[in-house]
Length: 143
Image 1 (cartoon, rainbow, N blue to C red):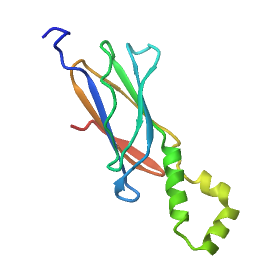
Image 2 (image 1 turned 120 degrees about the vertical axis):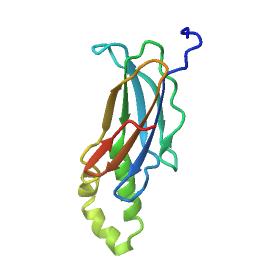
Image 3 (image 1 turned 180 degrees about the horizontal axis):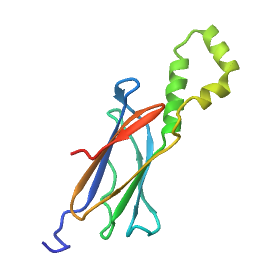
Image 4 (image 1 turned 90 degrees about the vertical axis):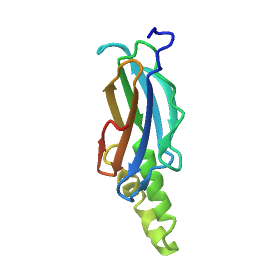
């Protein structure tokens, strides 16, 4: 198969917030690529997860790419989750929490960013699911 007819190398991802048992919506992420183990990283795409926790619009990686990195902005996601939960409390509880606002911001996530780097081969598809909670994460090659 010539390089003109070869299938593109593609990447997809989704995130499940295991602390609540639901997809993680609104997590910003960037897709970076490089050629060779010591090459410079180049941002190749960006997006955010939808209501199903998926980012469906990542571009195919350029020919010659050997490594891909997906960086997930988890701190902003967990801060928004805490803010959403705190807005569901009573007015008195909100007043108490506002006195402790720095603690709310600081307790959002132990990992403010999760960066996953993996090797790729031409013409293959790589699905990289992220299982996430405020104090840990797990990742694997999906299908």
